[in-house]
Image 1 (tube, helix red, strand yellow):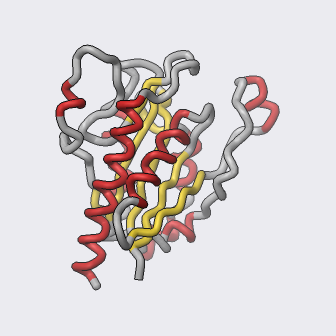
Image 2 (image 1 turned 30 degrees about the vertical axis):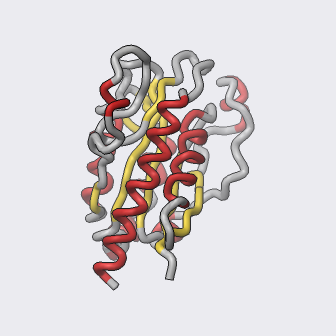
Length: 204
């Protein structure tokens, strides 16, 4: 049976969604891995989103907490809000109490990717504070480390991402993920899928 990897994200302006697509491509490149993209429910009204200038949502299906348990591994993506995950993603995690009670996600690998507005806007604190959610579920956090290689040390060009996972800088919203950031996302998806496959094989 194929290893099921879910890419679950929240994206208000599309930056995280762009990373999610590349992560899916990377994970799908691993033989024997089946990847599906989901988005979490929106908590804001259409009126509020309109005032915030948010574009229409993507056509990715909206996931329920129960569906999360079907995955063999999950990559979570979200923008930052004051150095922590956006409230929409936190609301989704808050709705996983039933899964927590049964420890349905225990032992499953999980990764994190993210978007921030600036270089000091949470490229490390956003994923770091999100690890608490994974810990209470007993999930195995899989950081990308420095496996992406030399490009993580590039000091000539602005780029997001950290050892915790792939990332991008949105700036005022007009900046989109760079080529390097998309490469990092692809790498994270491939790297994570490989580990998920190993863990799944070991538990089979």
